[in-house]
Image 1 (cartoon, helix red, strand yellow):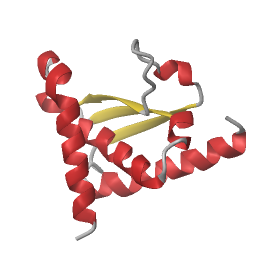
Image 2 (cartoon, helix red, strand yellow):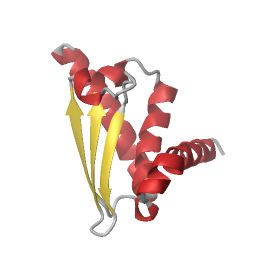
Image 3 (cartoon, helix red, strand yellow):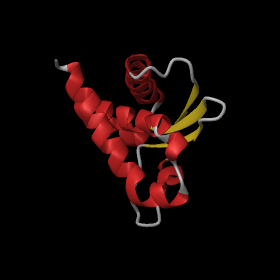
Length: 123
């Protein structure tokens, strides 16, 4: 990804994080967003590329979100917004995370919450 494209995607993502951390009441958290330009870092065993990873610690209200900017470039505005809200939902549900829940239900819960939050924006 070239520098101009990198900056453009970073601005797109950062604007959505700024908007949605406010809407979801996450401004009291310390959220660090890291932007990466290397796809290899975000590959899964099933050769599935992911948009982001979230590492949250509810005890200290800290979270780090790693963003795969080449993946963001392939998402239209609605898909990118849904992806950002989904990742922020991982922060909201982090306190209830257990190994069993994470593998079975957390992704579904975050996807459903993200859709619900985005839907309320249109009211």
